[in-house]
Image 1 (tube, rainbow, N blue to C red):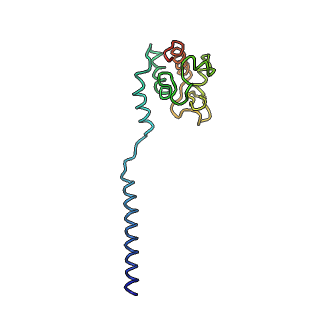
Image 2 (image 1 turned 90 degrees about the vertical axis):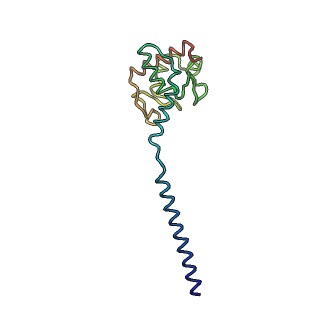
Image 3 (image 1 turned 180 degrees about the vertical axis):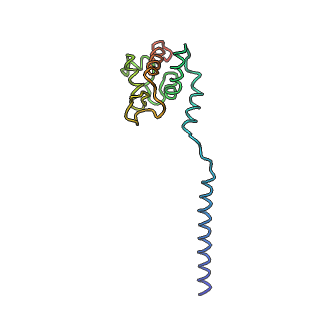
Length: 158
């Protein structure tokens, strides 16, 4: 009986020791894995680098608007389309079908957002409906609105 009890205790100790080693090994394994630093920023930078060549270029004012479009809009509105919501592109037909016929209509949705599209204006609220990045000034919003409308009317995004 004594031998059986000590044998049982040895088995328990061995199992417990193995369990502790397994936990320690798992903990050490998780600590050794490299952590990605700011993956969203890296992904956004990659998207801008890929999409920037497809943004039409113009004069200096249009260059600022084109850069804002590339960083704020082109992730979803590639070549004036919409990869998130079908039928919500930037062609003149789609804008008109969705009720955005004037510059004020286009500026409003850029500034305040709607549905899945975040707002980019300073006045955008609540926070969950707005971009988490830097907001656009009123002047930048006006430039971006003109940029979108010019390309829409010219048929660049048909």
